[in-house]
Length: 461
Image 1: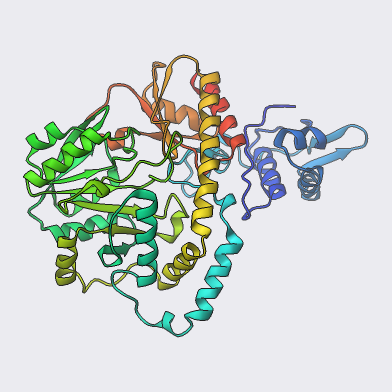
Image 2: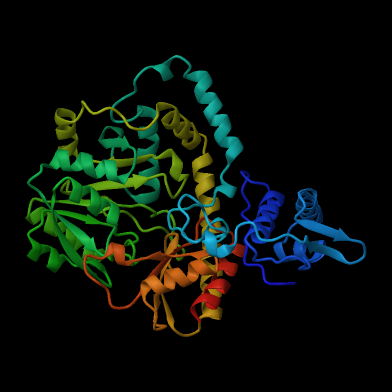
């Protein structure tokens, strides 16, 4: 069987037979699979992809019906005698078109989660129950801070799982981290100077840049953000990801956390703790929050449902210290809520019914297994030339590559074999010496992970 780099995506949106049919049709149209070439038998193709014979047969029958393929008795399936319709050289660079490589890509996106294991039926029941119980109330504007029931559920969950101490009135809901940073800048005052982890989350940096905030880039060592460098910067707001530094992946130890809290108290500053994926730790229990250690009201805790539930609901929250809660009521109560009331009430029922906790436990096991599969595949495929960073937590790892290729070359060569990986240079304030690639694995199956690493070997070695 000739080499097939195409990858089937097991989603409910596009049937498997349709993806298979589309792949062969496009490859025949652009001349990659030439006239007269024999196609794999149905049995071999089914075994290659791990799918049923009927799925392959349906795809082949559609190709035969449209004239792309011919079936020859006791010989097999052959490409019909037609000239390429869209030669591959004409496709490169055509505006508005998507190449076959892009449509068939194994995407190691760090923002993706495994939607196949999402409890769709339970979510629909919660949604229907919300629509039934809240029929009239859903037409009325909700609480600017977020629906009280959901804030109560979040407060209970945070205390039990993350050690966050708060009451519902300290919680403000909003559509994502960037919106929360915008609110915090209004709340804390425009004269504040932000100390940001370097490397660090670029989307926070972009918000502050657009709003004209004064920023200082604080280097990270093996324990996270350097407090000594933070002191020298004269910043009075520190944005940190202590439970799983983004993107490097280290966990801030208790000694550094205490040091950071002491800094905030002494300079009358604040710490923004972004706990974007603290639920997922692959060795031991999740790390308790920095906020739980704060006795002086200096930590603002940020959380999100993007990693632990689904990104598309755009639901996040922040926990304000008591002093800032009062200031929020005085200064920002005029801001309307940015998350749909329907979504908030549905999430509330989902949590109240115990579905949230069960879902998290199931996903922890699933992601831990994917993490192990990824590390094993990397170790087997790249015994030399690659160092894995930040593998003990979260849904991504970094690959520090010493293969005499630049970051751009690594990404482009991976794309040519149908794999999408990501740069880390965007997270640094200065140019980095060693090319480092970011790879998220939450949204990929174990088979996709293995195939992706195999293709990277072909691209990079």
